[in-house]
Length: 375
Image (cartoon, rainbow, N blue to C red):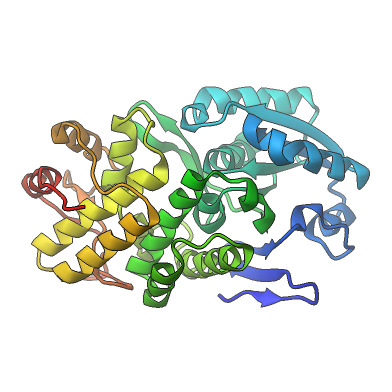
């Protein structure tokens, strides 16, 4: 699923699944594209001229105000709905508040939601779009590296519950994804590192060449490398999603690092950001693969060296049994056992009898969580 450039240099990725297909556009400045062939212009020609722009206060200040004014100049009706930034906003209460605001602004099934922001905004906007009036169309406009390479692709939407992260949601594919590389220029360095964590995951599970490219470019910060990271991330995830839209099989490989990572996020009260938690999760889940004889220890150490080179943490120091309790509620679990996605080498996931998750004993999980990691 490689990107095809048009005459203006904008990359087009067509994500085609069994039920849905949509276009992902990648380029600098495409949020403000006035060309008649732009995605927003095409939607306008199809009769969609009322939009609800869902964003957060930080992104609104950096990009949302200018983007809403641009849409209005194109003759569109725009309502701007802004939430508090951060994982604590990804709740049913926030979703209900947004839905009520949509009703107040007279949004209907002929309206379209645009989620402008990072993963929290995207998950919330998609969830509200999937539920409001039993489903209205929406566009992802991801502004963080993590959202551009991961959460904007594949149609997962949802909110967090007290019991755990992303436990209440749905699959609702976007009508399009507008990935403007320019938004990364205002992104804090810690958010760049968070996005790189997901790219390391793709490299470990799917793409050895991507892993090696990250080893060469982990410290680089300019548009050409950003575009390459995003393009390779979209290709890696898109190739999997189109095979398994609703996470019934191979899509599970995209959860490497996430069983322990989600437990760390929740255990920290979401003070540890997603990318950092997933990086730590990959360190410990990779250790589990080593101890089970699935992954060579040298490759595990190479993964950890890349994570450290990026500037992401390798350890989480808290009571392991607290995390274990949270892991027991993970969505991948089966038959009462904790199931974890494991790598067998760089670029390849472990698979047994067409299953992409492996049951792991609680004793081994605790042993790994209690093992010191050499930084």
